Amino acid sequence: MTTFQTISPIDGSVYAERALASAAAIDAALTAANNSQRSWRKSSMAERSSLCQGVVEYLVNHAQEIGEELTWQMGRPLRYTPFEIRKGLRERAEYMISIAQESLADVKVAEIEGFDRFIRREPLGTVLVLAPWNYPFLTAVNAIIPAIMAGNAVILKHAQQTPLVAERFAAAFEAAGAPAGLFQYLHVSHEQVADIIADNRIDFVAFTGSVEGGHAVQQALSRRFIIAGLELGGKDPAYVRADADLDFAVENLVDGAFFNSGQSCCGIERIYVHESIFEAFVEGFVALTKQYVLGNPLDAETTLGPMVRTSAAAFAQAQIDEAVAQGATAHIDPALFPAHAAGTPYMAPQVLTGVTHAMAVMSEETFGPVVGIMSVKDDEEAVRLMNDSRYGLTASIWSTDADAALSLGDQIETGTVFLNRCDYLDPALAWTGVKDSGRGCTLSRVGYEALTRPKSFHFRR
Image (tube, rainbow, N blue to C red; front, side, top):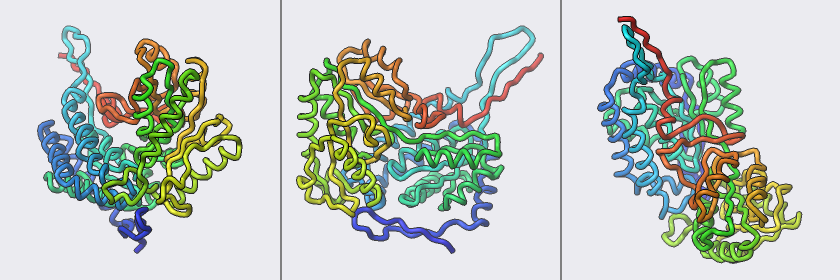
């Protein structure tokens, strides 16, 4: 029996140890999912809604204890983790439940005398959800609830850093009365995932993770004619125009850069500020950053927890060191954060100026509490720099001129354009990326399209 361990970033202890599923267990799970889905696809929308609402209710009712588990697994401060369920998960799940009937209804076409014609959306079958550790409930719920509402079965494989999340989802489905086999989880290795994807009993893959992981999923699918939704990395930019509400922009961009220790695919990693307000913006941004409290995420006063692992902190620090060696200025003295310690996951936030796109910190995903800020002379330069990236997940504009922001938004190569907000998923809008940020869509009514296949009915009366 092969096992894996979840090492807590809080203190380096083994928080959980689990066995990898055997080949027989994987085969049984795939068969059970297929069998259950054949019945579930015939269920009414009311039955599906009742089940999914029950899942949400279970998770929300257990949010505090689940939040503590999550803090131990990935390090986010306990003052925040329960809200991933109480607010984010609940909002997304309930919205997707509420729009399912309309989104999945038959598509009517123009009437022709003597004929009945319409398009029906059929479930795909079994959906494999591959979810990451950084927002483990939010990223998973984006696919799980819509897949079940559309009449599919789901198998969840969660990151080995957060295995208890998969088990909590399973407990929620059991408590809500899900049919046996409809929702299951598997603790498996990357090699086992590739074999599962290649199995004909899997009909769709919903993956959230790194660009390298996305390539691995595509490789595993190379001999099959099914689709994978890929939500990958980001190097999300913000542009602060001269007419922006400066204090408001500073407050929200600091949070957008450093919440979850910067470990967010849509977190702010690079900021472009109009030259007329650049110095004032940097001054305010640095001052507010210094107010974070880095420490044990179980402590009530902690607002910045450890990164997920020591290697992640070392990676981010290497980008800082490289930038400084190439002429960048680091504005935060790590000594201001007593918990900061090299060789541990505890890393102080950092703000860099004097950066250029020749530096990795402005071109490659950092996924840590680090942000680079550049001065720009006008909108044209800002758009050029925002688009100078292999990523395109979100971009935010900070301005009091909505018409100008709309014009700029049309020019920015990204999946979502924000005005005066960032680092947020509105479930009514399509969540998607361009370039190396992935392909496909979750959330909104558009998100249901990937989880179903169209079937045309053409009847002569």
